[in-house]
Length: 190
Image (tube, rainbow, N blue to C red; front, top):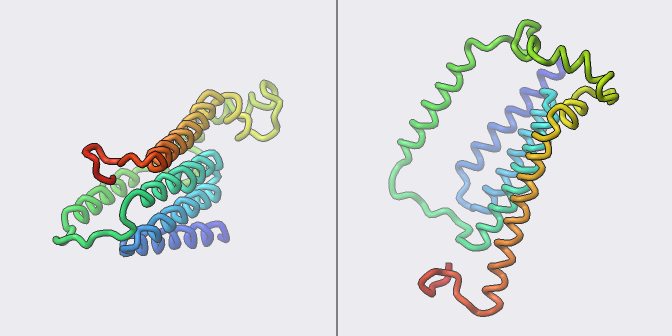
């Protein structure tokens, strides 16, 4: 019961954070709220026992994405321009997409149901074989580090490559500005 209350509280905070971020016009605040949204998502994933997904969400969503957006803000305006028309089409697209997602979840098994595909697939094999084959008492760690080791290495590689790319981009812009060269293609400031 307490776990359900925590999940509802985290989900409620996610909704409030998203609504405030959508209404805000100051882009620095939006970037900070997006980082908070990612951290709240990571917390929600931890409560759902998806630690690997939570780690990736925290690293990519709150870490790399926030750095990329802050770098973008350093090169552009800090306030959103007020649109000249009502954004009805994006609202309709979001509502239709949300309805499709909800419709797609209607035939899913209950969370933790013993007859769900997650429980009847390879999970039993991992539970039975990992203590003897791997020798690691934590089954999640055994799966991530051994059975899915290449997948985890790929995820870490993606995060590292994104970080290096951001650093190279920001370093190149700083070097151009120090040399006095304009950033834009036609000589204007970008």
